[in-house]
Image (spheres, rainbow, N blue to C red):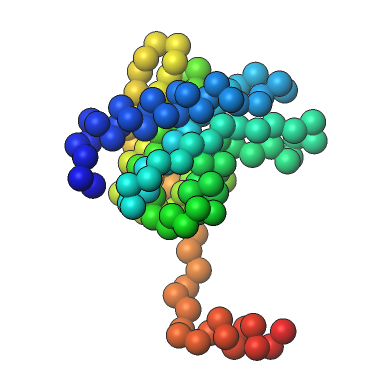
Length: 147
Ligand SMILES: [Zn+2]
């Protein structure tokens, strides 16, 4: 990463803080903002979006990752999450982050109630993430050819 660790952290946290203002959390009252720093230098943000049918709720982290990937980004180097109490990404979001990050992906979690920021590595939050075995060249064509 060309920018310094501190600059990236503060920039990402600022983006996540702003994204949190757009959280739609009428059921839990737990507003979350997230921002991802992609290896291509772009930043994408997300806020949690709840639903009356609770299971359809999507976390801020996944909104940010899916926005990044749908805009062509593929590798995520760092993540900032802002909540009231410094909550860390849920298990589902950790697995989604593992798809586009790695064990050294930095995750900063900020607590708005007291300004604390904790730093984690994805590999510490999600040891032994699930990955499919590497595919053989041409395997995709064989699968699609059988449809
Ligand atoms: Zn989540």
